[in-house]
Length: 200
Image (cartoon, rainbow, N blue to C red):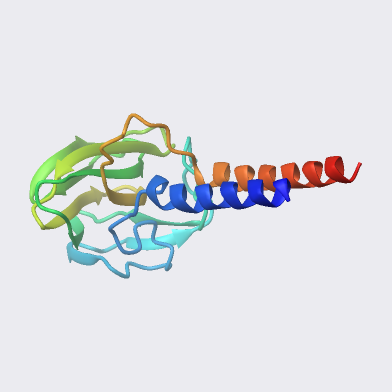
């Protein structure tokens, strides 16, 4: 009986904590997991821009779980990719993305929140590995992020784009999804030990 009570308490704790722990991405298809640009608006010179899968750049600290990412290689002028989403006016949001580039000349990449540039680089170079860029912005009720890019010789890669509301308890460590899975398996293991102990 004690084992069942313990399991119920732990399970309820996980269910209550999990939704708060996982920040919701307000973007549609932020990781390009549909294999295309569904949810995004294309603009400018969009030639040589596509969603691809398979090895191209090396991830460092981020996992490309779905295998898809976007590559951009417009020649001569910039292309754009944007998406609008609903927010709460006055609330803080974390805008982040993973970028990979090797400093091709000429090339450029910039990211904007409601038309204001938050990141801009000429001939960006992350050493050929993905690097995360993260910014805190204020919602207006309806906001838009826009990427602008060009890479004449080759391609710039983009993945795992997200916009999520910044938690008021941002200093609290948030378990990764894998941590919750491990926690769950640990609970199941604990249940087995308790059952064996009670029977013994």
